Each structure stands twice: as structure tokens, then as C-alpha cells.
Length: 510
Image (cartoon, rainbow, N blue to C red; front, side, top):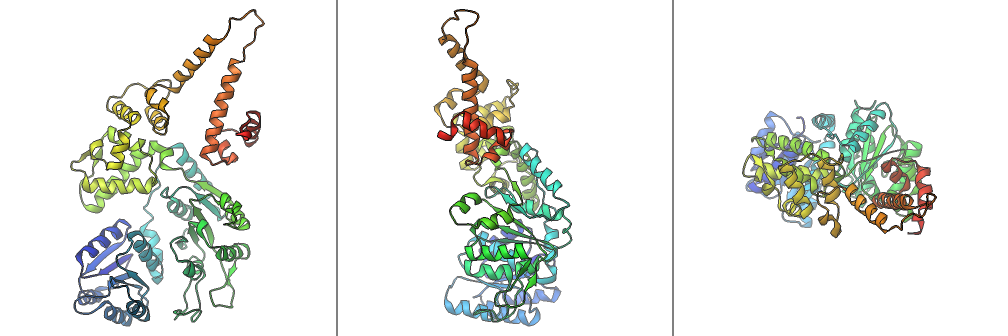
């Protein structure tokens, strides 16, 4: 049965969309145009999850649901319909449907719903983890090497970890790696996106419920804590968790016990919790949106994942990996990126991070007309960014590489210039910052009066160093949103040093 998902719909376009999307997520997909065709396939085995339209020629989805539950009472069935009426919804749930999905649906949410159904489908659930074991975290940039080292140090520990980083940086991949390299690796890894679950259902999702606990609770249901017993529970987007559930989660972390919704018997929780968020939890604590005591419970070990624009050296490596994977999935030859295309990709800001790069590589595999992908073949938003003067110069340099100046690699120069927005950026394309410093120093030297004697003193060095340190520290603090310890770590100085420098340079007054 592995991680198979069956789709039943008389609309070929719906079948095609779900087949491709589920296939990219690693599911084994079969599709059928009628309920009768699907039922015949049950003679050879059952899937993990069935997704069916409600209104089809011949037998309806509700009739199919009824017959399947006679054969496979524990099989999750998701009912789709373009007729979002009360009667259809009630009939679907009364028939034992796992969930009701109105059309048109949001594809990522539909995939998340199907993934939840797979996790609910009983004994085969551990095999889902096996399906994802081949996923790799790639990266040669220094920031990613720090992440790899942290995973290695935590490999023999079951300590709580908080993963921070922008959306699309791979927080769930890191959580899976922490689980797979921990003493709990043989047990379940269960993931829950707290922002994707409706507020009134999240408590039941986490802790389960007893039969009759609320309207529609026709049978007892195990929550994610029970599903992850002995293993790891990954709580993504923890910053969006409602306040009342924050209190319940804190109690579990503190006491190791919880109650199902409607239950009176305490249950023990032997679960490692890994939480993740793209939000600034300290700021949410200051605003009263997140409990401070829960924050400290979760923030035992913090791993910050760098944004893709902070590790541009990895873009070529990641792009080649995603292009190869897309080619395998689609059964086509692998596309090859020119150096100019890689440089243009490296200059893009990537607001969606690694997830966005992966999607671009899927797009290129399908849409690029030739096997060799140049700048002109890239998606429009990346081509437009490549037309900026500073990026154009970098792309030209990639096409005709020259020796790097002053020890600055071409890749590093691209990163420095791609983020600049001032008019000086365009005028200094290709010019190392040391040259700009030399010009400034020369102007200041020329403006000095001639020394009157051997004892004459100048404060030029002091003034330049002060301006350099002010600029560097102010930029680091802006990057870390005022978090001094993180800014010190990124600059490679001690926390006491940055505090002293902020006072000496008057940055507290800015």
C-alpha cells in the first residue's frame, strides 16, 4: 500500500492537476474516471487515501464512500465537490468521510489535507517517513555548514529545538534530519502546520478527542501527540498558535501529560518537540501574542536557517539538484544552466527561498525550449531583475570571467551589489569597495593642512575606523532586527564587544 493515493473524478483536468502535484510530493498516484473503475481496482489492494468527487456519471462519490467503508472501514476518504451546499457536506461526513473539500480548492491546502489523511491511515504511516528519507539538505555555504554542524552535535540528544527562518528555507527538512539522526529515529516523525488547521479543530488535531466530545465526534480519535509517541512531533508555524492552546502545549512540555478533548484520563507524552516559525517570537512575546514561558520552553536550542539570498553560492548546486529531480519525475532529459543563467539566479532576491527555486526549476524543466537554459529562458520576474545595471555587469562578467580583484570572488561581488539600492551602486559597478575607501581616504588626506612639526597628530585613522565600525554594526543590527547577540555572532565578535561598541559609537542614540 506504501504511500499511494487514489483520485476519482470524471473531470480529466482535476485528475491531471492532482496527479502532478501529489507526484511531486512523493506520493504514488492512481486516478480513475468513475466509481465502478475504482472499485474494481480494490481487488488488487487498497490505497492509503482515496480522494473522490461527489457527483459523477453512474455511482456517486457518496455511494462509492459507502461501499469502500464496508470493505476498508479505516481508509480515509476525502470528498470533493463543486456544489458547496450544506446537504453535500452533511452527507459526506455522515458517510464517514475524512474531510470535505469544496471546489475550486487551493492546491497547497489540498496537498496538506491529503498528507494529514495519510498520517491518519494507520499502520502504514511509518512508511511515509521512509519515502522522504532520500530527501537531502544541500549546501556548501558557510551558513549551511553551521546548520550541518548543529545537527551533528544534536544527533545524540532529544532536547527541544526551535527552528527559525523565512518561509521556504527548509525548516521541515531540518526537523526531519534532526529526527533521523536522533535516538528516536526508529519511531514516528509527525508534522503539523499549526497555521493550516482551523482554530476550532487544532486542539483535537494536537491532543485527539473522545467519542461524543463535540458534535460530529462519532469515534475516538488519536491526536498528533499520541501518533508521535516515542518519536518526534514537528510543530510548524508555532507563532500562529492560539493563546489557549499555547497554555495546553506549555502544560504538556512541563508535565509530560495531556488530556484528549472530552477526556478525563491523563495520558503520558514521550515525545520530542521541534517547533518552527518564520516570525520574530521575541517581538510577539513583547506584544503579548505569545506566552513568554512557552517561548523559553521551546527555545532550548535555536537553529536559524539562512535565507537563500544569504547563501547565493548554493544556488547553482541547488538548481542542478532540482532540475535533475524534475527531469526524473517527468521522464525527460535534464536541463543545463549556463553560467550567465546561474549568475542571474544568484542575483535574484528569492522571497520564497529554496521552495521558490525548486518551483522555478520545475517551470524550466517544462517551459524552457532548449536543453541549455540561458538568461532569456528564465521566468519573467528573474529576467527583469537581471536587467538591473549591476546584475547585467555581473552576468557579463560570468560570460567572460576575469581574475577577481583584491581577493573578492565574483560570487561575493554579485551578492554585495545585488542588494544595493543607492545611486552609488550603479556608478561603482565592478569596483571593489576597497577602491572606494581609498578614494575617500585620499580626499580626506588632501583636505588636511600640512603638518607643522614631527609632533603633529591626525585623527584620520580614528575617524575612518569609527565610520567603518558604525556602518558595519548598524547594518548587522538592521539585518537581525535589533537582536544584538545574533548581530555579534554574524560579525564574529563577542556579545560584550558589540555592547561596548554600540555605547562608544553612540548607536543607542540613533
